[in-house]
Structure formats: structure tokens, C-alpha cells
Amino acid sequence: QVRLVESGGGWVQPGGSLTLSCAASGFIFSQAIMRWYRQAPGKERELVAAVNLAGIGIDYGDSVKGRFTITRDNAKDTADLQMNSLKPEDTAVYYCQAHIVLGGYEYWGQGTQVTVSS
Image 1: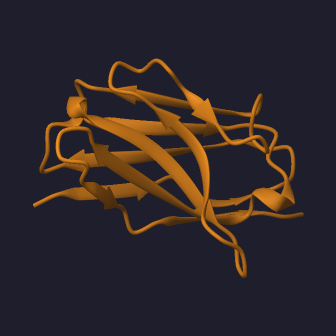
Image 2: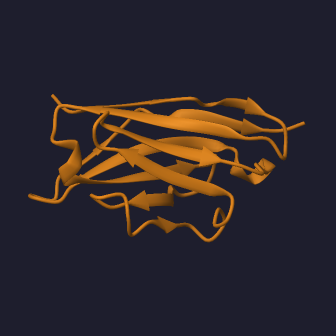
């Protein structure tokens, strides 16, 4: 059974930092592209960051470039999102996604809330 469990969300003041973590199980982690998405109230889900199988070829949404960093640890089956210089507009539910390259299957976590406010 595939599971993606996000953690690390919470409340932070503008300018602060948070690190989200996605713990994966039930599939071969090293064969999945890992992505973080977010969805704010009333808005569509948007791609935040993506990392390929070997941890290179990283992609970021325009709104987070230079502030967020995605990493993966294929030994621990985790994908982290380091978020710095957070802004109120970063407030959203953040979701972890695994895209299994062989077969094209995609799986989602349950999401973790990030709130940036003073």
C-alpha cells in the first residue's frame, strides 16, 4: 500500500522558515519523481517544486524560486521542502506527490497546512 505522509506544517510569521517532510512507503522511492504542490483557499493547486530520481533536475514554481529548496533522500525514502523568507501568500495546504516513472502512476499525501501571518 502506497503511503505519503507529510509533516512539518504549522504557523510561522512572515520572513520565517519551515521545513516540510514527506515520508514515503509502499513503492520503490528511487523510481519516483517527487513533487510538492500547494493549494490556497479558492485557488487551484499549483506546483511548488519537483526533484527527479537522482535529486537533480530540480524545478520550482516562479513564486518560490530563490526561497524554497527541495531535496530527497533515497536511503530514507523522504522528500523535504525547505521554505525560507515565507510570505502570507505562501499560506496553503501543501501536498506531496509521487510520480512513478514506470507506469505513470501518481500518488498524493493528505496534505499539511502552512499558515504565514503576523
